[in-house]
Length: 287
Picture 1 (cartoon, one colour):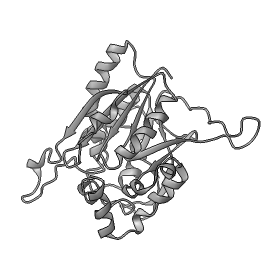
Picture 2 (tube, helix red, strand yellow; picture 1 turned 60 degrees about the vertical axis):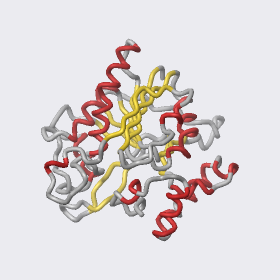
Picture 3 (spheres, helix red, strand yellow; picture 1 turned 45 degrees about the vertical axis):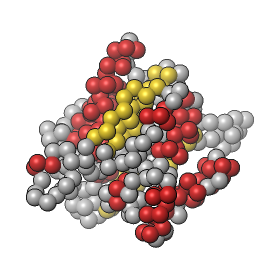
């Protein structure tokens, strides 16, 4: 691809471990890669901008976690967007004017926009057999009216209490126009459910993509790459092991089984804000 945008939104978490590997991944699939980074003011943002040395960081934004908290009940501290339901699309829409301005500078819209998180490590999948075995699978380029996901899951629908199809929402990509449509789901005129009243964020994403609130889009599960969540305990790996994808993924999978005290120790040792892992309901992520 010629020009792509990478939007990294959410808590900083393990960005400083991921950064070199993330840059390598995207630099291999496009001539020009523009980055947009938006995070919460509860995260430790020290050194984030500096981590983009020799990369194209177009815009860096720190968002207040208490946005719109005037509408909350007395005693509540978090705003209506500080959650996994509304936060990601809201952050992406804040980035959209900066994306559009950069597209004007480039004289063209981006070939592709990636929607991901600072703690996510994307890796290429390999061809398994034949003359090209061991080579990277070819990139699946985005088609019109299509949203590409890294995978799907079965989750319990909070409304029906039955199993339902959910989309992995930590690594997605699409064309520029679809990026705008996809992220309008935070807005009251477009969202299907209010926060806490839906089937679950990842199930709702699938429903939104194929809904009639806009031009229905296609869900596509791509196979050329994977997206892995990297946890703070990977910082303990030595230089050699930290370069081996399988080793660092195995280390990350130890996170849910660690004690609360050990998780806090790891975050404090490596300068990660505790809120990055406290302010989440995810069983595989939280402290």
